[in-house]
Structure formats: C-alpha cells, structure tokens
Length: 169
Image (tube, rainbow, N blue to C red):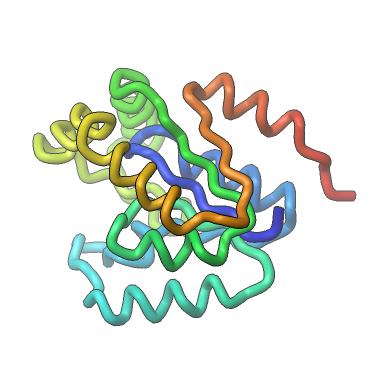
C-alpha cells in the first residue's frame, strides 16, 4: 500500500482513517476539502483542482481522502488501494456531531476539519447511500482494474482493518 484513496460519506471517518494510514505507511496525507475550499468556503476553479490532484498522484506514496466524484477517476487510476467507507447515515451524522463537539465547531484546516453543517449537507448525508454510493461504485468498477478495493461498513471494521496491516519500523 503506497497510494491510497479513501472515499465515503461526510462523517464516515475518512480523515481519521487517512491520518492513521498515512502514519502507518509514512506517506503524506491530503484532505481534498482542504485543497478544494479556502477558509471562506470558496471553491477552487476546476482546472486548478484537477492539476493539483494530477501532481499529487504522480508522487510515489500518498493517502488522499475525499469524494469529489468529478475528479475521482484521477485518484482511482493511480491508486494501489481504494478504501470505501460505506458507513450508515446515522453513524455519519454521529461522526459529524462528535467532530463538531471535539473541535468546538471550528474549522481547523491543518487537521482536515471542515465544519460547515447546513441542511443541504445533512440531506446529502441522509441520501448518500441512495444517490452517491451507486456513482462511487460505478466509478470504482470503471477505473479500478489493478488496485485492491476494501469496503468497510463500520468504524469497528475500519479499526479492525488497521490492526491487520503491518506496521513500519
């Protein structure tokens, strides 16, 4: 595992798992929300977002977390491991609540915390399995021919997955 993509609904634990994996394999961690949005939630122009990702995936080792389905093929075609966190909406909402409490509702870019909770985001989480999951699975099926794909359906499964990996020395 040298090039890892982590995909999943908001609040599924992508950043937490990404940090742990990055530390485990001694690779840089990129949180795509931190690349795409600035502190005022202004989006990066699409061409720049694509160019940044192309530069990131050209590196020999990396962990990148985030959905952004429009650019997911860039990451999928270069990954050797794809982790899909297929966590229930209830657990994702719980994860967001925990994150909000832990960071007191703040946005901590350096830690990958982007706390922008609004009704549209909550609807997105509640509808993720119905609307986004099929798209994500189709993109994985289309663009991943060489990588190991891991689907984890709970935080417990994610913790168990980490324990099965060899640690760097």
